[in-house]
Length: 596
Ligand code: CAO
Image (cartoon, rainbow, N blue to C red; front, side):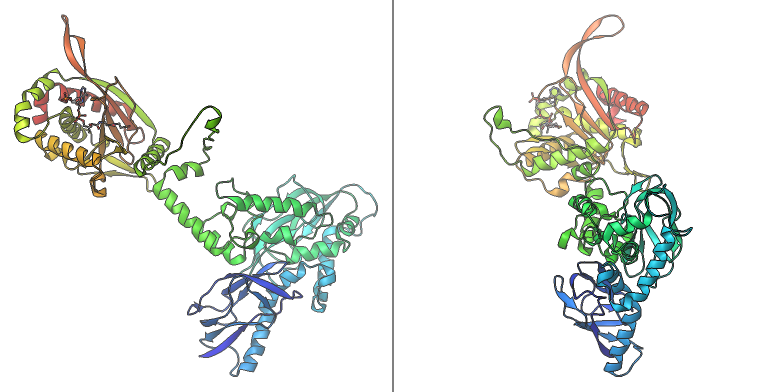
């Protein structure tokens, strides 16, 4: 075990870079090459990989710090072979590693700077690039010069800074696309950085010769491009560096994220377009995804995390400098998505792309005042919208002849007064509903669509909608099937009073399998109640009325109760709903059957 300093490697011609993300904390154990931080110069962003495996003992940088080559950013207790016993040679070893690995990173930054800024050590690369570029431009030899016929060219993979077999993570063009020089053709990602390979020419994409997931190396065929005019002239006129610039930026490049700042552009047109695109993609997670995911601003470690978590970067709003997406943004996005899917509510509706209702300025039409919604009102609004949007509702209407029931109920008045309980219709509705649920258990289920499972409940708890000054509340009566009419009436009375006095406990509003909403005391002939999801049905009850009913011989006056049964058509089919409603009507029409 020895403690080694972690130093900033050669930044490849860039004087300084800003730390935009710190990926480890003191005490963390890292593997050799694990990213310690991501830094960004005005040319590119790259990870600084750990030179050794071991434990981070000290970390002296934070996001926003500016770092330069040779700066010590912390120390690591390496757990084994660092290649040297004494610190000096360890440093040398570090440098060696940096030479072979970190340098590869930093060269990406460097390569984007164009010829004029390249360090001498790049000269070999430069000539490589020339070779690459030439090959791409003139596969069949030098072009004729001057204005010429469109020419088909094979764009080849430029130097990848020593990387080999780098996977393609995005294809940014399609056949038939008209592209400009420097437009990103594909994005590749090594284990250190992601980078775009830009087009060396302006032209029309004839054929994409690679697929997402392919591993490509320098010299591989990439794209077949129909190049208009003279390709060499194009190269020269783009940047003054001609073909070299195109190849250099192709090689170095930036993570796709940095393109708006990074891409060389003769006229600035590309920069503007790219900036606009960046701004769009970082604006909100509710916008349509950028199909290529290429114009987002994020470092390699963040891209990797997003890929692992299945998050689309183009939907994530970046909170870093220049709207860069940080690790925390990805994590926050995942948390938000999880919450949304668990709640499945109003938020989900926004994510589903349903346009919001825009409010006009009502004061233009007359006097208005605003007041805050109560907590209950907000919860009701969210629940109703969630259910309305998620549940395919159908409402089955039915009438029940409650003439005899009402005679019986009224006959119990004195008994009720003795007990201090008002026996209302609600107790009968509860009892009849429980019995109908036993007969048709598909009304006592919940659907787990994620797991494609039906959850069958072995208990019968029923919610009752209570109208309170604060808003609608739905306390739950448990084990309705096991309770008698008086018990149910007493409990309903007590829970309704508690709801109106705002004394209900959260537990008293949970666990319902089915709900009853009775507007009979108020009026109405029918309505279409909204299912209280994840329940799959709700019984709406309107005001009973005396009606002439044909008994086969004559019209006779009967007290008729209108029932409105709404159900989730995913869980319950129409025939079953008709059977359930008929069963209810039957039970309420002859309450002796409630005893069976
Ligand atoms: N037809 C005719 N009269 C009815 C009736 C019906 N379907 N239902 C109730 N009544 C009568 C009762 O018999 C009672 O009359 P009396 O005082 O003469 O006996 C009167 O209406 C009031 O009853 P109630 O409402 O106090 O008692 P209940 O047990 O029937 O209902 C409760 C209790 C909590 C369901 C009810 O008070 C309530 O809050 N209903 C509103 C529910 C609601 O807002 N639903 C909408 C949800 S979606 O927005």
